[in-house]
Length: 416
Image (cartoon, rainbow, N blue to C red):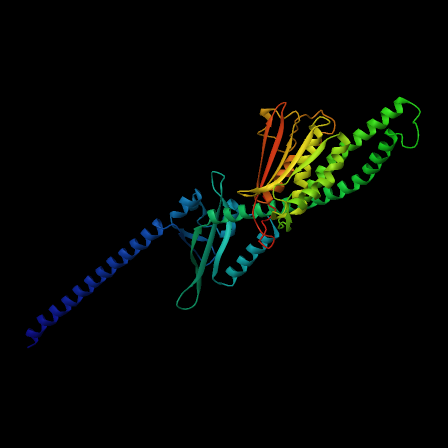
């Protein structure tokens, strides 16, 4: 029996060892496959993997880190993250940066997990790139800390977009601040200058007309006339600046109100008639539909019409007639100013509405070249159009067309 049993036991033991060997071979094969799969994922992924030991020194980087930072990270093996950052880090030296790294050091010392720690790295070609890194502590079954393992990703595109957006916000804030300061300066200075200028103009006009008796000599009368002309020229520049500060169209809605064609024309001519009389110019109104109503920012459109009439009067020879027409139009309402002055050369027509453009900069009282520019901005704020036709030696006609709207209709913003 023992003879019979012995071979049977020997065969069973051999088969058991064979099974163990096959199981071990299968386990090793599965382990190799798992390792190969891990490495394939680690090398092919857009993110990269990393690992540190119990002293927080890097022991592993997946190769994909090289694609993002163009830096041989194998040189960083054996270094801590703080030591690596000392070599290639590009974070600005600010209180915020120092506090960030202090918090990270506290997390590492306490073996806490951390998420999305962002920092800048300077690659070998000098380009600044940004990484976001997350990690978890590793412990043995007995609870001993043996390091960190984690993942990181390239966030350069996102961070640079955020930095660009913040830079744009700062530029916008600076521009708004500068514009506010400039608006206040222009408004204040314009008003401050108008008061003494009006006094100079009034007194020099009285002197030129010898309202209180002869001045005693032609030279004095000429000086008084020069003072009057210079003061009027300066006042026209101040008026342009005042108009610019008032209608450089901050982000506020237009103050719409309903007017009739006749009432608007009367308001405009009540002011313009005095300017025309001084130069011997006759002003006529052409109002085919006096009761035609429409909604506008009254002050703004009055300034538009007065700017256009002032130019027409200024450049028309004495005894000529300037016409103001307000009438219905297919687009809403049309305001037309027509003169028979010297006209505008064709080469200036394309730029006449740009700032600092003047037909004749040497002409007395030609202003600062802001009037038509301001006029166009006000018209544009109404979502309207302005155009000009002119023939040298025959005159100029300006057309302002505004869309139909009611006073209770939402007004457009004044920003272009």
